[in-house]
Length: 358
Image (cartoon, rainbow, N blue to C red; front, top):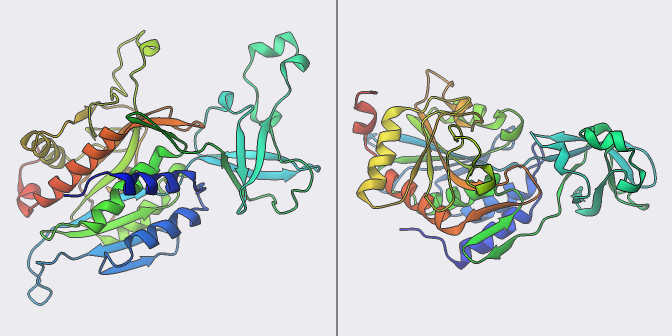
């Protein structure tokens, strides 16, 4: 049974510290290819940049075509970030956000820019120069700049930037940027390494999830699986300061295990897969929580609509402060997510999908 130890934590540190803003996932893709090398029957990079890996299972009979479920597992490699839009001289650049972000949180954040990770800062006028009436309004993105200082000729409009946050472990928790979704990538790497023999495992490390689930769409079309499980990170809505009203959307909390999606903004999870995951967790005494219907979405929203329809579900590691400069997650939730998925795959048979949907 795979688990999370020092090796896996060091790998997550590398993944989180890398820059892989949507459309420029090369750094993480190279790490994935290195980590799964020798553990898959076939590995390829498709036209959009997805890493597609297949493991047929040691018990599968290639000659007789023994009936085994083709199970797609997907985790997106990309992160939210920025794209340089215009060079205004002296190392100052206008920029656009890539993926959904709260502009209020951006001023003063340190960033890294381009292939060489040049240091910069998101600048806005300091409090000394702001008029009193301006303090009542949100700073428009057009008023912000990425400032690298003179001598930044190595970057140009179109280059990506991301937060300069570095990975830290603090007690039972991890603080890092891009936990959405390097946690999912780290889990999927372990599942490829330890793929059970009873299924054909189809692993998709996808691109461009944060800008419209684009990589997952073509990956699912290429794989044409019997079902799909998406591995992601979901916001934990569990701080005391947020208790002013009942939480009926993001009800997940740190420390309660992986979150199995019932529904989100893009997917009604297949009830057979939800039941299989929940039953597995209960049988193996693995903590889990059900993510109540709410907004947001994962690659499952694109996967489910490919070919003639693909039964899909999402399982996420809960984390705080998604799509900001630093998120926080619990190592134990990461461990239990891996344990649930590994065990659920080992128990996966055609009977799971042969059952009634309701």
